[in-house]
Length: 168
Image (cartoon, rainbow, N blue to C red; front, top):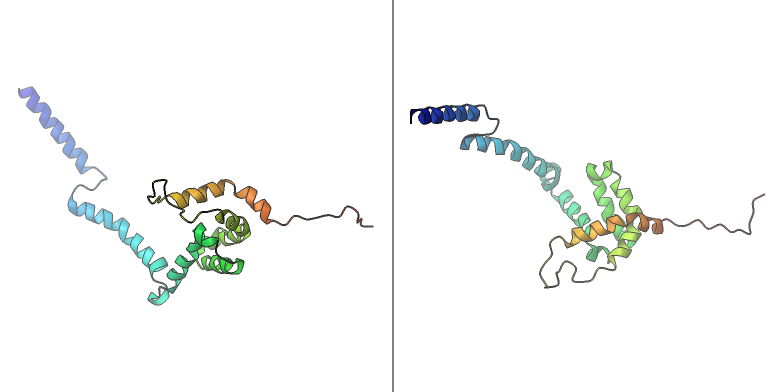
């Protein structure tokens, strides 16, 4: 019995030492500080970049969300070329889109994107049972991404060469 009590005491001491040296928060106050150290900067970043523009103006955020509507195929198929490019241009105000050249890529692939969007039926996003499928729009975009190279080739005007005309 004494050996078992000694073993339990050693185990308890080892666990207490491991807990004290642990990099993980152990108390409620430590957890609160740990979570706050990650969430507060994220929230501040969001408020600075998206929720509030310079001077507390939310106009830029509203414009960004308007521009994002272009990624809804049911909406995109109704847009004229001019309106679509105006929405795409609104994305250029954000460095993340400017840096990767996404605006130019979206413009380049617009014709193929709109053609693919035109095949989307009105009840897009519903399962066979009529329930809402929250991942349907992502699935559709991923499937379109897999074929984007083929579609971009259709967007680039093909150079026609008249074989009967020769340069001297």
